[in-house]
Length: 487
Image (cartoon, rainbow, N blue to C red):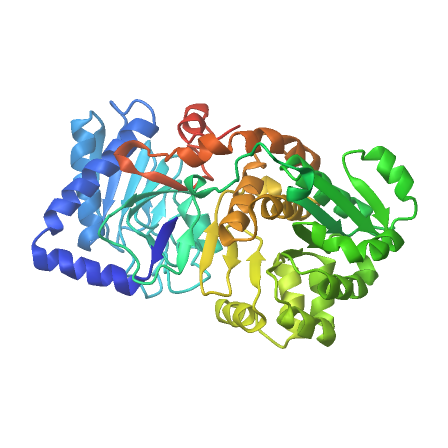
């Protein structure tokens, strides 16, 4: 995983560079790597018109060095010193702009718009100019880059939603000697995926999962979770809910074992045969009673989603049960569900209250979004940025719950297993995927590709590695292949 550093650690590192007299050497190397990336990923560079917008400080020096090497590669490069008197800098007539105006140290409001790119692509060095990593919302006048080449280390704040929108595609060149001193904030990579290999004495009950969800009005949520779990590698999947005709559902979904609520209550005595439980998808107004029954009878890992989370937000008894449960619990809310949960606990929704909640309740919390954040009760936060915007459809969260249950059933509960399942769910949103059924259909191929995904460390020209793939390059066929994406 890639550690995230805070700005104070970056400042300490910059001072150490100055004291050792290595600043100019590092600037030259940054310039060469940025130019190499541009040459290799934006097609033939010879004759292309490029404008380097140079600010004060090391960020501007990086852009100037990149301009020098781009000229050597055959581009027609002009340089302009940024001045508010000339802002916004126009990209009209250029193929590409290199943004080196401001770095990470900016903390004051902007006086106006910095760049008007027109048709030119924008490559920002380290951070789009004007972005303030110390705040959540970003000014409209900040540079909106097509590609951001992050230098040295991934910084806290660079994975905030508003910053990601400004960065476009993000790639990192990591300095080996610049790491976080605590390592509690980490970005999950494809090479971090864990997935237990099949063994000779494998048995379906060794990776069995149980979905407790579905009602007369919302039975589809539980079925999506169950089928996703099966397709992601679970050996056996039982789905129990308030179903009017479980026999009809059983005939329609022969890969699942479908039962109604009465059957579930009869089976509580043997529920610990299952290696993981998923509780909540489509469960409806019976959520509180069924979740209480699960917490009394089961001792293994539980994924609580949707209506299960809503039940916890309104029931003091459930809150006490969750706190006292000895097995692992993972809550998987989206923004609305976490707002309801925290509203029931008189908490505001922010980083501090989320960390306080998981520590107080002794649970882990997966907050869906881009990126998805996994908050652990041990103090770590894992970011997963594999998902694409086409995953934002009804049923996508149910598919994620099923994949989580499957991975936990196979590998046992760990943050690595949770992050791995989340990453694979993100990859189901590849080209042409527009609904949860096509996400599920993509799972067998993705699961089969895990050994190759986890064994490859993708490095692009200039020794940059991909961080966020949402932008112009990854949409190109060649770029997608170089990322090793299984599309």
